[in-house]
Amino acid sequence: MKYLCLIYDEEKKLAGMAKSESDAFMGEYGAYTESVKASGHYLGGNPLQPVHTATTIRNRNGKVSTTDGPFAETKEQLGGYYLIEAKDLNEAIQVASRIPSVKTGSIEVRPIMTFS
Amino acid sequence: MTAEGEDAADHVRATVDAVYRTDSRRVLATLIRLLGDFDLAEEAMHDAFTAAVEQWPRDGVPANPRAWLVSTGRFKTISAMRKRARFDASLLDIAERLDAAARDRREEDDAGVEDDRLRLIFTCCHPALTPDAQIALTLREVCGLTTEEIAHAFFTSPTTVAQRIVRAKAKIRDARIPYQVPALAALAERLDSVLHVVYLVFNEGYFASSGESLTRHDLSGEAIRLGRLLVELLPEPEVIGLLALMLLHESRRASRTSASGELILLGDQDRSRWTRELIVEGTALVERALTLRRLGPYTLQAAIAAVHAEAVSEASTDWAQIVALYDILLRADPAPVVELNRAAAVAMRDGPLAGLRIIDAILARGDLTDYLHAHSARADLCRRLGRAEEARAAYQRALGLTRQETERRFLERRLAELPA
Image 1: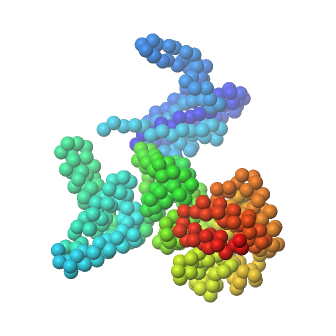
Image 2: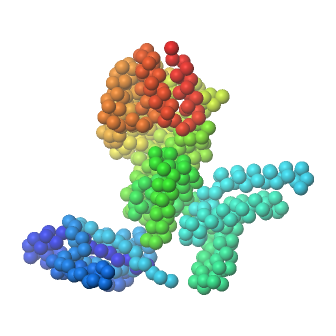
Image 3: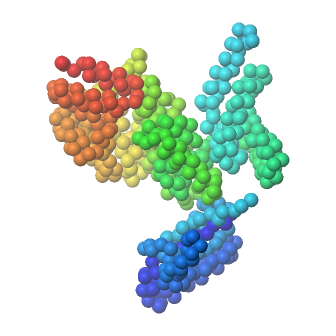
């Protein structure tokens, strides 16, 4: 079963990190990604650029509107994701609970919907 | 049918009913594992019992009814899937897989069945479900309570409970919450909600919330059995404390009601009727839990129950020790209900007025205003203080809140005894 692990964290906090700190943080992510590749859980994953780069698009009554910014303004922002393969939610939770941002932000685990 | 034939049919029907009461949850727990789906398993279980009603009068009651029900339920589900597979080919695949998986495992042995019940408990109490859903689902699936009974225990509506259960099952299925006992590393963390649920189940059996009979022995027995199983699996202080608490309550069951089914309060109970073996076992468990040092709410409540159990009368009870234990308990669990119980103990130690002041303060804050026992405790203290009018009003308030026949009769009797 596939699960998407959505990584939420405060961009401000990340942006405010000293270089040594953010290097260490990126190092943790690198090691984590390697470990889930090795364990066979990894299907994909990417960090996202900050929310100031986000654009939200809607089509209402045939009229497309394009606005600056994310869909919802929240304290923590979507900053990246992993797509993983796990045999059940317990395994997915176990894999997701090692994502480095779990200590500063939060990880939302969502099963991928499949159509038979 | 002849009269004899009807008698035999009635007898078999009574047997089916009895098996349903004792074994339907075990059958369900195993079917969930075999079929991998709560709703499918429930359907299978009902099909199996329907088949029992039809076949047992003709073929006789099988030697192992539970195993018969499991394999019949599984067989019926798989063959129904094969039939429907003519219209939906994907079902055939599932049916074959279930069939192979079922043949693969020995689901009939008792050890496996016990594991299934634990699997069911931990799945129902999974932290990915909301606490309300955990409790509702456990009471429904593990204990077989109706949504109405659960709603009453929760002070909410049957519709709300039904929705909680439907959503919880959908999450178990869609997010694939596994049907398993958690690994040892995660076990302790997942235990709190399990203990809470077990104690609620016990209380549902001990203080039956609705209906005519005061106690529902099967539910309390169920909770105690779950408690014992958990003590075996994870002898944490609070697991032991909870089992001790349930056993000490259980020891008083026979003396809680008179021969005619009337409620008898602790102080008026015939203590010679308390079950010694349960007191001995419960007290030993309390002592074991207390030596483990980390005092939790269950252990403290069990310690209070043990003080009651060793006293030969209400008057000779060590109320000072009970109040002291409530003081510690209030720090661990600052709940209004605990305050209320402490107030009753204070009334015994320092007199009814001292207790009444505490209860009035709780009610004045807006806590427990719809809680039956707050009003009946208040009524009792007013009665002892000779304040008949206040007592009458409080008993009437309590009467308006009771949904339990024995309790209603008790309160009416107390009302009638008040001086005009």
